[in-house]
Length: 155
Image 1 (cartoon, helix red, strand yellow):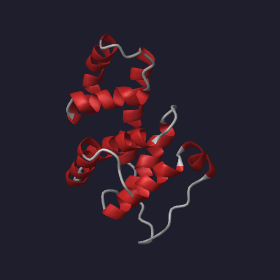
Image 2: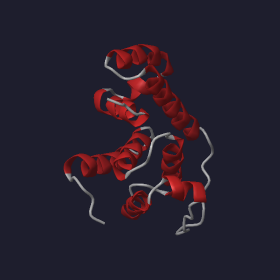
Image 3: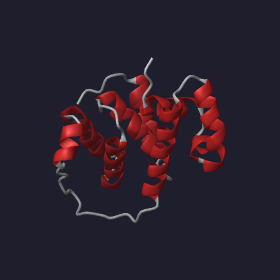
């Protein structure tokens, strides 16, 4: 069974509290647990690097663009992130679950993945990003409900 970095991240999201896996002091113990659970050492290391990248993005200053601005994707982004995934991100913005800053963070984290991106992976990256944002509990709850309890999105 070939596990991906996102599989490790999804496992962390489903089985641990956010503070348990975002705390760098706890990562060595978690690393050992994940390898014992069957995840490849390299995939676990990449997952923690991905989480570190997410934490680093939170430290950057927030840049606000004009309200209602349109997002144009770079060629590399359109190559890696399929149309349905980009549409899903726009849908979440229209619902108020993501704002422009969070959308950019999701796009950054999608681009940081080495594996192919699909709608399911995009949903999980959105959940991971929202989980790691202060004051995003309500948005996280709405998205979590959509992902876990409503099945496929209709938009």
